[in-house]
Length: 152
Image (cartoon, rainbow, N blue to C red; front, side, top):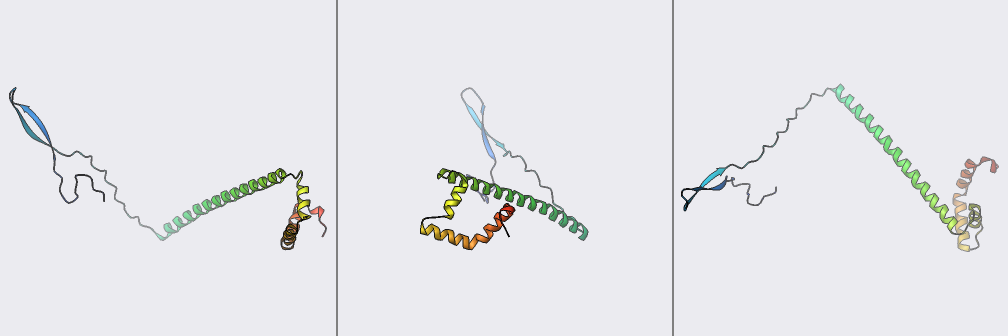
C-alpha cells in the first residue's frame, strides 16, 4: 500500500478550505471560509462475474477446442524452430566454406585431399580417429548423396 504525502489511511480526510476575501469597505477586508469538497471522479464499477453452468458435454467440447488450438500452435512453433535451425546450419556451413577459401584452398577437393593426407602426426591421428569412429556414417551419407560413385 502506498501512502501519499499528507494522507494517512486511518485518519479521515478533512475537506479543503478556500479563503475568500469579501471587501466590507475600502480599507477593511473580511475573510470567510468556504468549504469545497474534494472532487474526484468515481471509479467505474466492475461487472460482477457470474459462474456459468458447465455441463460435462460442454466441458468436453471446450477441452477438445483448446487441445486443437494448442496442437496447431505447437505445430507452428515446431515448424518455425525447424526453419530457424535450418537457416542457422546453412549460415554456419557458408561461413566454414568461406573460411576454407580464405585459408588459401582453391577448391574444396584440394581441402579434403590435404585433410585426408596430413603430414603432421597429431593431425594424422585425429583424422584416423574420425574415420574409425564416423567413417561408416560418412560413407553412408556419400552413398545417399551420389549412389553411383560407391560400389556395394
